[in-house]
Amino acid sequence: MKKVLITGAAGFLGSHLCDKFIQMDYKVIAMDNLITGDLKNIEHLFKLKNFTFYEHDVTTFVHIPGKLDYILHFASPASPIDYLKIPIQTLKVGSLGTHNLLGLAKEKKATILIASTSEVYGDPLVHPQNEDYLGNVNTIGPRGVYDEAKRFQESLTMAYHTYHKLETRIARIFNTYGPRMRLNDGRVVPAFIGQSLRGEDLTVFGDGLQTRSFCYVDDLIDGICKLLFSDYVNPVNIGNPNEITILDFAKEIIRLTNTDQKIIYKPLPVDDPMQRQPDITRAKTILGWEPMTTRQEGLLKTLAYFKSLSNQDLYKSEHRSFES
Image (cartoon, rainbow, N blue to C red):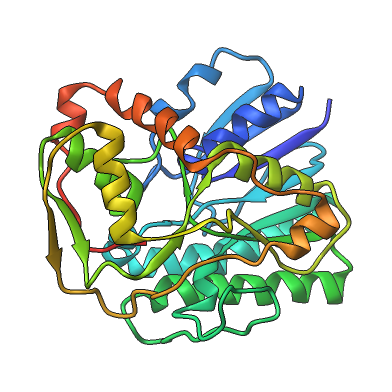
């Protein structure tokens, strides 16, 4: 039985990765300091003999006994409300945490995949964004703590590959949505669905003409696995190229939830990207991957999940002022 370490395992993407590797009959070592993760996301796995959870901060020394085949480094705040609230921890997990896990991968001779992000492109001047684009990032702006943590993470990972010949993979993840997202994390999909279910008006920032491209979580996890099991070491965009404006997306949510809320407008946050669309030519060509779930299919599944939450969970979620 092969063994995989998944950091950020109690988070949105990390928990889905745990499910995936359990289904593939792996021994899963899950690690999370629970600063943004939630044990509810993985508690259904605790009874399994091939699942182990460690509450641990990867910015401190990481030790895993025995052999280790793969590491998936998904530990990091991933929404603006989180990384604006805990900027130092965000920078540390991208730098110190990545360094610790690369060292562990070197010791164990394991393949490591790091979760990078479309935010390395900043507010892009190239559209759609391909992996050769170097980005337009404000290093000292409010989003810089996340953007630069991920950019440094990529540099450090590639240095370990080049200098130590370590098997590394870099996934640049674009906007992803699905069950287990937190309603209060400030991202577009849970924010709009949460407002609709609570009977609140939907908040759009700026004129709403900024664009996003939303990938359903099952497709994203499939792309991550195909990248991990490939032999490709350069960054690969993983996302859905189906682009939509935030304003049109708000209207789509209103239709989907069959509600009659109004759309209200607030000032655009600093450095909020105006366009976000992945060029997935590399993923199609090298991995044979592209998303298969339509936005309507994915949103219906996500809506069903949020509807299943208790009223307490639904109403304790306060509205956040940043989109991602």
